[in-house]
Length: 132
Image 1: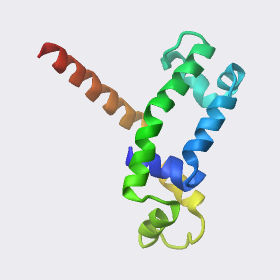
Image 2: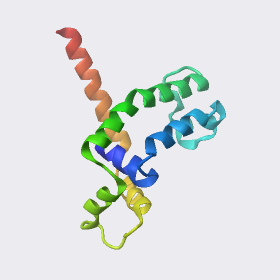
Image 3: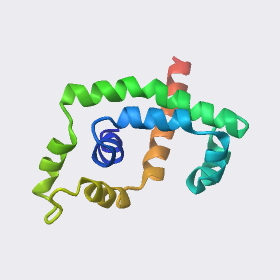
Image 4: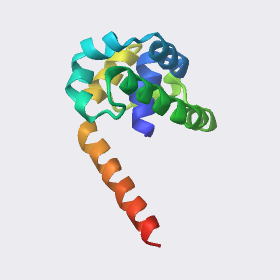
């Protein structure tokens, strides 16, 4: 989650990334979901029935985690600048190009594997709790 917040939120979108994502989700229509290639490829895996229901599911999911994400960022004092400073010693020649740093890291991250692992862990935990 730290990587997702950092590399897909703070670095490319800035400190107001939660507001930007929320605003974008509120502005989406069903046609946005249908015309987006990535979302179209995942459409069959998104709960909600029809496209409008799926858009509602995405919005509810974001709403459920946005408070936690905001607290995570605030408690750790995360800013694009201090994240960049932390990375600067490891990546040379990218001064002032936080969006490039985020894109570089993003291209080397396999989110489907990571998300699949999270889903499997959640399922196993739920089954274990049910058995107790």
